[in-house]
Image 1 (cartoon, rainbow, N blue to C red):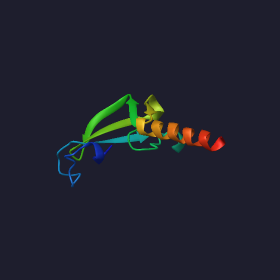
Image 2: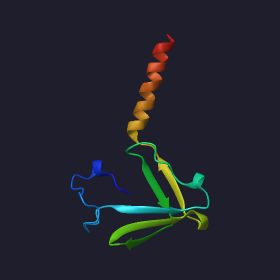
Image 3: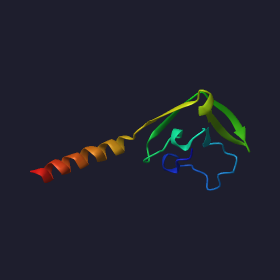
Length: 94
């Protein structure tokens, strides 16, 4: 996964061999079992991932068909937006 906003030394060339990012690959029988990241800052937690290198880059492989698992935790920013939207809706109701 690559999040250039959190890494000030993000390489312009992802294949430069610096290994400061990782790729996450999921295997699943259906698309609905794959995670969907909704906003910047969400945390993706994976369980039972195999870690290895592919083309000199770190790769996490998660096979959902044989016990791999994931969870997404929303970002604090998305929580703040939801609270602010709720406050605006309650003001409009008055």
